[in-house]
Image (cartoon, rainbow, N blue to C red):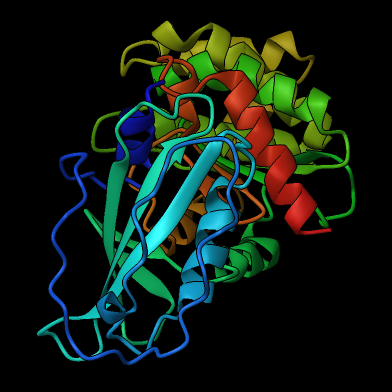
Length: 329
């Protein structure tokens, strides 16, 4: 993945579009941050232009906060280096414009990429193509929400100190394709508590909600281990999730794991089956999740389907998980 492509994606969800790779001309205004920290000491890698203190006109966020945010976001990649070039006031009250240059130690001749985003007055969000969390601990709020509300079927460690939460749709082909990746993560990170949250995208997958309620009945009647065997069986027979054949497909999946399909089928129509699915959908809505599969690593959102299409190599995903867990120890 090229540096400029990586900046465009801002590695998983941070879709900050880079400008042309030249250094932008920055208007010079009176400084509001008089003590600008010096640039990092010389090290192998690209040569950054000098920092002009006059380009730091906004009182918030500080350069230290921006550095902390980029460190949390990119610290897993030892090859990536950056320099905050400016933090400026904008015509919108309280909204600041941040510009940073990004390069690679291993390719010092490559043009530096320019990263630009805006920070909201509360200092907790950034705006690029969308509104995203910001700050020295940008994922803390989402991590807390998931720890409190993500109570779907789980596996792995009982302790929630390190938590992986997947939102998936049992009729979604990308969710099916990403399951081997999820299995690898669970195997590679045995210290993680993994939670599966149903997010049936009923506008495009007519049988997904029904499949989710079947799964909840399996979990309620036979436990988490049976649930994960059930969704494996459903993914394996996913082509059968059609309005004409979904009942038989789901019944076959229940039978394959040794349960009574009639009993599970009857349960699937009850409020006891629907309530946890509806709660999971509401949680996804509150977190503004618009697609599946989506993975959260201690609150850090990753469109994990990008592993399947090759945009996010598994080794990079593994580094992100290890990095996030190391920050949360």
